[in-house]
Amino acid sequence: MKWHDLGFWATDEPSRAEFPNRFGKAMCFYHRADGALVSLMKWGWVTLSRDEGETWSPPTRPPSLVVGMAKVWGQRTPGGKYVLFYNPHLLNRYPLVMVQGGNGIAFGNMGIVNGDRPPIRFPGLYKAEGPQYVRGISEWSSDGTWKDDAVWIAYSMNKEDIWVSRVAIP
Image (cartoon, rainbow, N blue to C red; front, side, top):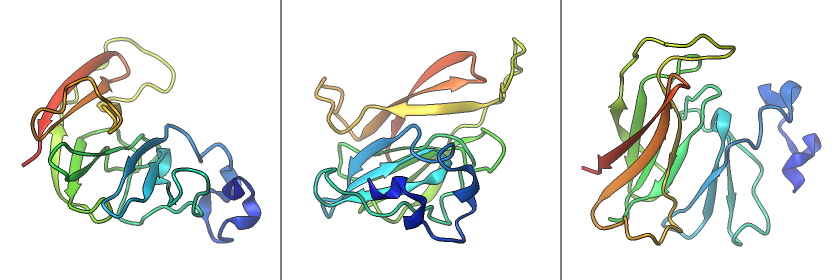
């Protein structure tokens, strides 16, 4: 893909020096209301495909998506809305928040999904406190869980325990 060539990147992009370490990790996908396939990645990278992944737009980092190096999860809800789950801080991995939108492009109405910070029980390199590494059930899931307007997500707490949450969409 062309975005794997730094020649296609903006010369003022701060992540150029860290490429490829900061790009293309932990992707998740959803289809927007206009049919475009959206890919979200660590560091807040976003890229689009209008041909089901055959080609992709140049990567960008929306200035309103503040995530540091944490993962982002985005999906369409059973009720046709769109949600993003992430840690809205450049350094901390707490709280875990959700924003929602009607078209898969613009998001707002931020709410905390989990703001807990239990003590870290076991020492370790790169351990961070808080809810992180969020993942959900993708739009391709056909296991019958889409019965109401809610989203199921799983995430790590302090990189020690796995939590599962059912988040009702207001």
